[in-house]
Length: 202
Image 1 (cartoon, helix red, strand yellow):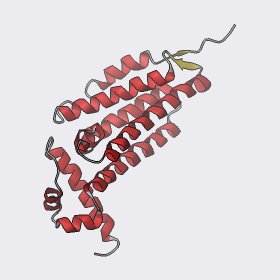
Image 2: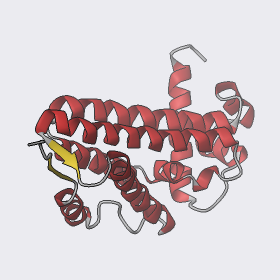
Image 3: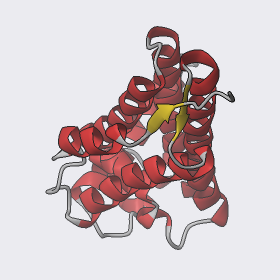
Image 4: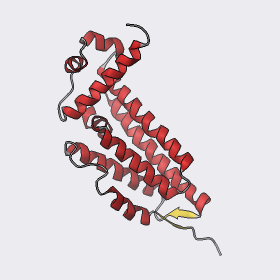
């Protein structure tokens, strides 16, 4: 196989894994079944990925790159804190909804029984997201004269937990309860209470 075909084959393997996670919800994915899905031998799989854990890491890499590249664009394009937070959460929920197999990885259930490193990476992904939300809320006071109605760390945790909960419901319902269902109404309620004008000392 030529060098330029290798990345394509790696991509095919990851796409097949994501599809199996979507279609075989609740089942454990074996390398034998994945090899059949891709149409190669197990030995060929291992030429591209030394272990199943590395395949899951490839999916997590894709999730991180997709989400945080778009968050960077949101921070460049959107000036106010409330809209920034809402757009980031909508991005996360929309990404999970469009990629059900990856939503299972984000939800963590599919990583049960796999190496602890994978669960740590998903935990770090959501911690990084929460830190980004906290930074946006803290900057709101300097940029807009607004401060969170509760401490920034607590507000960021609430927003992140809301998104995580919607993704978890999506996975648990076998992708029937869409993460974006009722989201506009829910965000309207959350955002109305999120920030208030800073009280300046007399």
